[in-house]
Length: 299
Ligand SMILES: NC(=O)c1ccc[n+]([C@@H]2O[C@H](COP(=O)([O-])OP(=O)(O)OC[C@H]3O[C@@H](n4cnc5c(N)ncnc54)[C@H](OP(=O)(O)O)[C@@H]3O)[C@@H](O)[C@H]2O)c1
Image (cartoon, rainbow, N blue to C red; front, side, top):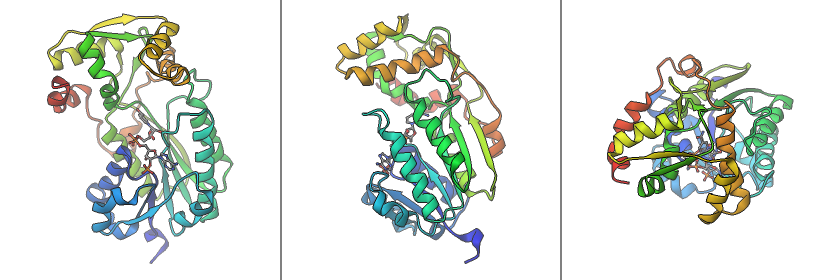
Protein backbone atom coordinates (compact mmCIF):
# COMPACT_ATOMS: atom_id res chain seq x y z
CA UNK A 1 0.00 0.00 0.00
CA UNK A 2 1.57 3.34 -1.04
CA UNK A 3 1.45 6.26 1.41
CA UNK A 4 -1.36 7.93 -0.51
CA UNK A 5 -3.50 4.81 -0.03
CA UNK A 6 -3.13 4.71 3.75
CA UNK A 7 -6.55 5.06 5.31
CA UNK A 8 -8.66 8.12 5.97
CA UNK A 9 -10.20 8.13 9.45
CA UNK A 10 -13.49 9.74 10.53
CA UNK A 11 -14.18 10.15 14.28
CA UNK A 12 -17.69 10.39 15.68
CA UNK A 13 -18.77 8.37 12.68
CA UNK A 14 -22.20 7.39 14.03
CA UNK A 15 -23.35 11.02 14.39
CA UNK A 16 -25.52 12.75 11.78
CA UNK A 17 -22.53 14.48 10.17
CA UNK A 18 -20.15 11.52 10.50
CA UNK A 19 -22.48 9.10 8.72
CA UNK A 20 -22.93 11.51 5.82
CA UNK A 21 -19.14 12.05 5.57
CA UNK A 22 -18.61 8.29 5.23
CA UNK A 23 -21.41 8.10 2.65
CA UNK A 24 -19.77 10.90 0.61
CA UNK A 25 -16.33 9.26 0.86
CA UNK A 26 -17.81 6.02 -0.49
CA UNK A 27 -20.41 7.21 -2.97
CA UNK A 28 -19.41 10.70 -4.10
CA UNK A 29 -15.61 10.50 -3.92
CA UNK A 30 -15.42 6.74 -4.66
CA UNK A 31 -12.87 6.01 -1.92
CA UNK A 32 -12.57 2.20 -1.54
CA UNK A 33 -14.27 1.07 1.69
CA UNK A 34 -11.08 -0.68 2.87
CA UNK A 35 -9.29 2.69 2.92
CA UNK A 36 -11.80 4.22 5.34
CA UNK A 37 -11.62 3.85 9.13
CA UNK A 38 -14.72 4.92 11.07
CA UNK A 39 -14.30 5.40 14.82
CA UNK A 40 -17.24 5.74 17.19
CA UNK A 41 -18.35 4.99 20.73
CA UNK A 42 -21.07 2.79 19.20
CA UNK A 43 -19.58 0.40 16.57
CA UNK A 44 -22.89 -1.50 16.36
CA UNK A 45 -24.50 1.64 14.89
CA UNK A 46 -22.15 1.33 11.89
CA UNK A 47 -22.89 -2.29 10.98
CA UNK A 48 -24.12 -1.15 7.56
CA UNK A 49 -20.81 0.52 6.71
CA UNK A 50 -18.84 -2.42 8.18
CA UNK A 51 -20.75 -4.77 5.87
CA UNK A 52 -19.51 -2.67 2.93
CA UNK A 53 -15.89 -3.13 4.09
CA UNK A 54 -15.35 0.10 6.07
CA UNK A 55 -13.01 -0.55 9.01
CA UNK A 56 -15.03 0.24 12.15
CA UNK A 57 -13.24 0.78 15.46
CA UNK A 58 -14.39 1.80 18.93
CA UNK A 59 -12.99 5.13 20.17
CA UNK A 60 -14.00 7.58 22.87
CA UNK A 61 -12.08 10.86 23.26
CA UNK A 62 -12.29 10.34 27.04
CA UNK A 63 -10.58 6.94 26.87
CA UNK A 64 -7.09 8.33 26.29
CA UNK A 65 -5.38 4.97 26.87
CA UNK A 66 -7.12 3.41 23.84
CA UNK A 67 -7.33 6.45 21.57
CA UNK A 68 -3.91 6.40 19.85
CA UNK A 69 -4.36 2.68 19.11
CA UNK A 70 -7.76 3.40 17.53
CA UNK A 71 -6.12 6.03 15.29
CA UNK A 72 -3.13 3.87 14.31
CA UNK A 73 -2.66 3.36 10.59
CA UNK A 74 -4.60 6.46 9.54
CA UNK A 75 -2.85 8.95 7.25
CA UNK A 76 -5.49 11.68 7.52
CA UNK A 77 -8.12 12.10 10.24
CA UNK A 78 -11.37 14.07 10.45
CA UNK A 79 -11.92 15.19 14.04
CA UNK A 80 -15.65 15.82 14.38
CA UNK A 81 -16.31 18.12 17.34
CA UNK A 82 -18.30 16.35 20.07
CA UNK A 83 -21.63 17.33 21.61
CA UNK A 84 -20.32 17.37 25.22
CA UNK A 85 -21.73 20.74 26.28
CA UNK A 86 -22.87 19.70 29.77
CA UNK A 87 -19.78 21.07 31.53
CA UNK A 88 -17.59 24.00 30.36
CA UNK A 89 -14.15 22.76 29.31
CA UNK A 90 -15.17 19.11 28.89
CA UNK A 91 -15.41 19.23 25.12
CA UNK A 92 -12.10 21.08 24.69
CA UNK A 93 -10.37 18.49 26.90
CA UNK A 94 -11.83 15.74 24.68
CA UNK A 95 -10.59 17.44 21.51
CA UNK A 96 -7.10 17.98 22.97
CA UNK A 97 -6.99 14.25 23.79
CA UNK A 98 -7.90 13.50 20.18
CA UNK A 99 -5.23 15.82 18.73
CA UNK A 100 -2.58 14.29 21.02
CA UNK A 101 -3.66 10.77 20.06
CA UNK A 102 -3.44 11.70 16.37
CA UNK A 103 0.13 12.90 16.92
CA UNK A 104 1.01 9.76 18.92
CA UNK A 105 -0.46 7.54 16.19
CA UNK A 106 1.58 9.25 13.46
CA UNK A 107 -1.38 10.83 11.64
CA UNK A 108 -0.09 13.33 9.06
CA UNK A 109 -3.08 15.65 8.67
CA UNK A 110 -6.13 16.50 10.79
CA UNK A 111 -9.35 18.11 9.51
CA UNK A 112 -11.45 19.75 12.25
CA UNK A 113 -15.09 20.96 12.34
CA UNK A 114 -14.94 24.42 13.95
CA UNK A 115 -17.28 27.47 13.84
CA UNK A 116 -17.10 30.88 12.12
CA UNK A 117 -15.07 33.61 13.87
CA UNK A 118 -14.35 31.74 17.12
CA UNK A 119 -11.87 34.35 18.45
CA UNK A 120 -13.56 36.88 20.74
CA UNK A 121 -16.99 35.39 20.05
CA UNK A 122 -19.77 35.92 22.63
CA UNK A 123 -20.93 32.36 21.94
CA UNK A 124 -20.23 30.46 25.15
CA UNK A 125 -19.04 27.34 23.32
CA UNK A 126 -16.61 29.28 21.09
CA UNK A 127 -13.62 28.66 23.41
CA UNK A 128 -13.89 24.91 22.66
CA UNK A 129 -13.39 25.59 18.97
CA UNK A 130 -10.74 28.26 19.39
CA UNK A 131 -8.84 26.06 21.86
CA UNK A 132 -8.95 23.11 19.45
CA UNK A 133 -7.72 25.26 16.57
CA UNK A 134 -4.85 26.41 18.82
CA UNK A 135 -4.04 22.82 19.82
CA UNK A 136 -3.82 21.91 16.12
CA UNK A 137 -1.58 24.90 15.38
CA UNK A 138 0.79 23.78 18.13
CA UNK A 139 0.83 20.12 17.00
CA UNK A 140 3.51 18.66 14.70
CA UNK A 141 1.13 17.89 11.83
CA UNK A 142 -0.68 19.74 9.06
CA UNK A 143 -4.38 20.60 9.30
CA UNK A 144 -7.51 21.91 7.68
CA UNK A 145 -9.92 23.87 9.87
CA UNK A 146 -13.51 23.90 8.59
CA UNK A 147 -15.34 26.79 10.23
CA UNK A 148 -18.83 25.42 9.69
CA UNK A 149 -21.76 27.82 9.78
CA UNK A 150 -24.99 26.55 11.39
CA UNK A 151 -26.99 23.74 9.84
CA UNK A 152 -30.35 24.38 8.17
CA UNK A 153 -31.38 21.29 10.18
CA UNK A 154 -31.05 23.20 13.49
CA UNK A 155 -34.55 24.50 12.66
CA UNK A 156 -35.96 21.19 13.88
CA UNK A 157 -34.67 21.87 17.41
CA UNK A 158 -37.30 24.59 17.96
CA UNK A 159 -39.80 24.10 15.14
CA UNK A 160 -42.39 22.12 17.10
CA UNK A 161 -42.57 24.73 19.86
CA UNK A 162 -42.58 27.60 17.36
CA UNK A 163 -45.41 26.16 15.26
CA UNK A 164 -47.46 25.13 18.31
CA UNK A 165 -47.27 28.59 19.88
CA UNK A 166 -47.07 30.60 16.65
CA UNK A 167 -44.29 32.62 18.27
CA UNK A 168 -40.53 32.63 17.68
CA UNK A 169 -38.68 34.27 20.56
CA UNK A 170 -35.25 35.61 19.63
CA UNK A 171 -32.56 37.88 20.98
CA UNK A 172 -30.74 37.97 17.64
CA UNK A 173 -32.20 41.28 16.44
CA UNK A 174 -31.43 41.82 12.76
CA UNK A 175 -28.32 39.63 12.89
CA UNK A 176 -28.05 37.31 9.90
CA UNK A 177 -27.16 33.62 9.63
CA UNK A 178 -25.44 32.31 6.48
CA UNK A 179 -26.54 28.77 7.29
CA UNK A 180 -25.96 25.73 5.11
CA UNK A 181 -27.20 22.16 4.73
CA UNK A 182 -25.53 19.64 7.04
CA UNK A 183 -25.08 17.30 4.09
CA UNK A 184 -23.13 20.00 2.25
CA UNK A 185 -20.83 20.33 5.27
CA UNK A 186 -20.38 16.55 5.18
CA UNK A 187 -19.40 16.75 1.51
CA UNK A 188 -16.90 19.54 2.28
CA UNK A 189 -15.40 17.52 5.16
CA UNK A 190 -15.11 14.43 2.95
CA UNK A 191 -13.41 16.51 0.23
CA UNK A 192 -10.93 18.04 2.69
CA UNK A 193 -10.17 14.64 4.18
CA UNK A 194 -9.69 12.89 0.83
CA UNK A 195 -7.53 15.64 -0.69
CA UNK A 196 -3.76 15.43 -0.65
CA UNK A 197 -3.44 18.93 0.81
CA UNK A 198 -0.69 18.96 3.40
CA UNK A 199 -0.81 22.66 4.25
CA UNK A 200 -2.41 24.52 7.13
CA UNK A 201 -5.63 26.09 5.89
CA UNK A 202 -8.84 27.54 7.32
CA UNK A 203 -12.11 27.51 5.36
CA UNK A 204 -15.28 29.31 6.49
CA UNK A 205 -18.16 27.27 5.10
CA UNK A 206 -21.41 29.14 4.58
CA UNK A 207 -24.52 28.93 2.48
CA UNK A 208 -25.04 31.22 -0.52
CA UNK A 209 -27.36 33.60 1.37
CA UNK A 210 -27.72 35.05 4.86
CA UNK A 211 -31.09 35.65 6.54
CA UNK A 212 -32.35 37.42 9.66
CA UNK A 213 -34.56 35.46 12.06
CA UNK A 214 -37.58 37.37 10.69
CA UNK A 215 -36.69 36.34 7.12
CA UNK A 216 -36.17 32.72 8.16
CA UNK A 217 -39.47 32.72 10.04
CA UNK A 218 -41.29 34.10 6.97
CA UNK A 219 -39.88 31.36 4.72
CA UNK A 220 -40.63 28.63 7.28
CA UNK A 221 -44.14 29.98 7.81
CA UNK A 222 -44.80 29.83 4.05
CA UNK A 223 -43.48 26.26 3.93
CA UNK A 224 -45.45 25.09 6.97
CA UNK A 225 -48.60 26.96 5.99
CA UNK A 226 -48.86 28.29 9.54
CA UNK A 227 -48.34 31.80 10.96
CA UNK A 228 -45.19 32.63 12.90
CA UNK A 229 -44.76 35.88 14.80
CA UNK A 230 -41.14 36.81 15.63
CA UNK A 231 -40.84 38.27 19.14
CA UNK A 232 -37.61 40.14 19.90
CA UNK A 233 -36.61 39.78 23.56
CA UNK A 234 -33.53 40.78 25.55
CA UNK A 235 -31.07 37.92 26.05
CA UNK A 236 -31.91 37.73 29.77
CA UNK A 237 -35.57 37.19 28.84
CA UNK A 238 -34.60 34.43 26.44
CA UNK A 239 -32.54 32.66 29.13
CA UNK A 240 -35.46 32.93 31.59
CA UNK A 241 -37.86 31.53 29.01
CA UNK A 242 -35.59 28.55 28.38
CA UNK A 243 -35.20 27.94 32.14
CA UNK A 244 -39.00 28.13 32.54
CA UNK A 245 -39.24 25.52 29.77
CA UNK A 246 -37.09 23.19 31.88
CA UNK A 247 -33.51 23.77 30.67
CA UNK A 248 -30.72 23.95 33.28
CA UNK A 249 -29.55 27.56 33.65
CA UNK A 250 -26.03 26.90 32.30
CA UNK A 251 -27.37 25.28 29.16
CA UNK A 252 -30.00 28.01 28.73
CA UNK A 253 -27.20 30.61 28.79
CA UNK A 254 -25.30 28.61 26.17
CA UNK A 255 -28.34 28.44 23.87
CA UNK A 256 -29.12 32.13 24.33
CA UNK A 257 -25.54 33.07 23.50
CA UNK A 258 -26.15 31.75 19.97
CA UNK A 259 -28.50 34.72 19.51
CA UNK A 260 -25.99 37.17 21.06
CA UNK A 261 -23.43 35.88 18.58
CA UNK A 262 -25.86 36.22 15.67
CA UNK A 263 -26.77 39.77 16.69
CA UNK A 264 -23.04 40.60 16.76
CA UNK A 265 -22.60 39.37 13.17
CA UNK A 266 -20.68 36.22 14.13
CA UNK A 267 -22.38 33.95 11.56
CA UNK A 268 -23.37 36.42 8.83
CA UNK A 269 -20.45 36.08 6.43
CA UNK A 270 -21.13 34.53 3.03
CA UNK A 271 -17.97 33.01 1.62
CA UNK A 272 -16.99 31.08 -1.50
CA UNK A 273 -15.05 28.49 0.51
CA UNK A 274 -17.62 25.70 0.10
CA UNK A 275 -17.31 25.87 -3.68
CA UNK A 276 -13.51 26.13 -3.38
CA UNK A 277 -13.40 22.82 -1.49
CA UNK A 278 -16.09 20.90 -3.34
CA UNK A 279 -16.37 22.49 -6.80
CA UNK A 280 -20.16 22.79 -6.46
CA UNK A 281 -22.62 25.38 -5.12
CA UNK A 282 -24.24 24.89 -1.71
CA UNK A 283 -27.91 23.93 -1.56
CA UNK A 284 -30.11 27.04 -1.38
CA UNK A 285 -32.28 27.49 1.73
CA UNK A 286 -35.50 27.62 -0.32
CA UNK A 287 -34.58 24.30 -1.97
CA UNK A 288 -33.83 22.74 1.43
CA UNK A 289 -37.21 23.93 2.74
CA UNK A 290 -38.91 22.46 -0.31
CA UNK A 291 -37.11 19.13 0.13
CA UNK A 292 -38.16 19.06 3.80
CA UNK A 293 -41.68 20.44 3.28
CA UNK A 294 -43.40 17.27 4.51
CA UNK A 295 -41.39 17.15 7.76
CA UNK A 296 -41.83 20.90 8.32
CA UNK A 297 -45.55 21.08 7.64
CA UNK A 298 -46.14 17.81 9.53
CA UNK A 299 -44.43 19.11 12.70
N1 LIG B 1 -22.85 23.70 12.72
C1 LIG B 1 -23.95 23.38 13.40
O1 LIG B 1 -25.05 23.92 13.18
C2 LIG B 1 -23.90 22.30 14.43
C3 LIG B 1 -25.10 21.87 15.00
C4 LIG B 1 -25.04 20.84 15.95
C5 LIG B 1 -23.81 20.30 16.30
N2 LIG B 1 -22.66 20.77 15.73
C6 LIG B 1 -21.33 20.23 16.06
O2 LIG B 1 -20.96 19.35 15.02
C7 LIG B 1 -20.81 18.02 15.53
C8 LIG B 1 -21.37 17.02 14.53
O3 LIG B 1 -22.74 17.34 14.30
P1 LIG B 1 -23.84 16.18 14.24
O4 LIG B 1 -25.02 16.79 13.59
O5 LIG B 1 -23.25 14.95 13.66
O6 LIG B 1 -24.12 15.95 15.79
P2 LIG B 1 -24.62 14.60 16.50
O7 LIG B 1 -25.40 13.75 15.57
O8 LIG B 1 -25.27 15.05 17.78
O9 LIG B 1 -23.30 13.84 16.85
C9 LIG B 1 -22.58 14.03 18.03
C10 LIG B 1 -21.14 13.68 17.73
O10 LIG B 1 -20.32 13.78 18.90
C11 LIG B 1 -19.49 12.62 18.94
N3 LIG B 1 -19.07 12.39 20.32
C12 LIG B 1 -19.77 12.64 21.44
N4 LIG B 1 -19.04 12.28 22.52
C13 LIG B 1 -17.86 11.79 22.06
C14 LIG B 1 -16.70 11.25 22.68
N5 LIG B 1 -16.61 11.13 24.01
N6 LIG B 1 -15.67 10.85 21.90
C15 LIG B 1 -15.75 10.94 20.54
N7 LIG B 1 -16.82 11.45 19.89
C16 LIG B 1 -17.87 11.86 20.65
C17 LIG B 1 -20.40 11.52 18.40
O11 LIG B 1 -19.66 10.39 18.01
P3 LIG B 1 -20.14 8.86 18.24
O12 LIG B 1 -21.53 8.89 18.81
O13 LIG B 1 -20.09 8.21 16.89
O14 LIG B 1 -19.13 8.29 19.18
C18 LIG B 1 -21.00 12.26 17.22
O15 LIG B 1 -20.15 12.35 16.12
C19 LIG B 1 -21.55 18.01 16.87
O16 LIG B 1 -21.02 17.05 17.73
C20 LIG B 1 -21.30 19.43 17.35
O17 LIG B 1 -20.01 19.58 17.91
C21 LIG B 1 -22.68 21.73 14.79
